[in-house]
Length: 315
Image (tube, rainbow, N blue to C red; front, side):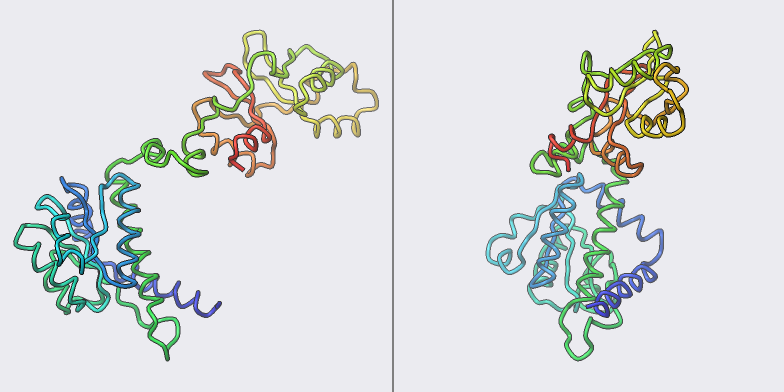
């Protein structure tokens, strides 16, 4: 299994090194972005499965696309392709009869064709306007030419193209969220910090003049394992966590009447209410914290706890 993975990784690297001229790649991306119709993805067998996946990836990232099954197209489904479309034709050998016949039919309509194929001398390459060479040195097992390295390299190259097209379109995370309203991915893309944060009387806050004892009382009342220190103007000054409390007791013989400013963490990590909740979760995981104050124009407006994100089913 490890050897197969290494061969597949090497195949992707091989294709990346032979990607081609920058001007041609730019022309391909420009052609797909400028398509006024849809991107029709064609392929048979395993390349057909890849074509279907690529159509879904393009459609989900701002490029209207569909999968066209070539044998069905030759028996009436060819009407799915219009003169405003661009065709992506997938055939490793470049000699797949059904794919060639569809390409031969739509070319006279003025439909540009981008071939994902091995080399530049096969029939599909000669029929196409653009070529992305997916030829690899070998498959995963030499004695068995099962499509493995070749299919992996094709998927990787098609994904790279889809991401380039997405970036050229200026397709944003918000746009992506609109097209993914369902499931856990939809929640991660749709949910904002403002949707899960705690506000008002739920906020554990004390002034900078408060004592360590005041901080403990507020922390116990609000039951979040933290209290925030905010100025009279509402600016976040610092944060005191239960971890800070434990360390303070270890260092200070009698901290209860001392100023909380002596123990708090100044300039704590924060997030904004318009941030994606998933981004807040990422900050928590990266820095191993369970709470994030929420600020807006330097004003403390809320707090988000790890448990809030769990309850929102982001974890």
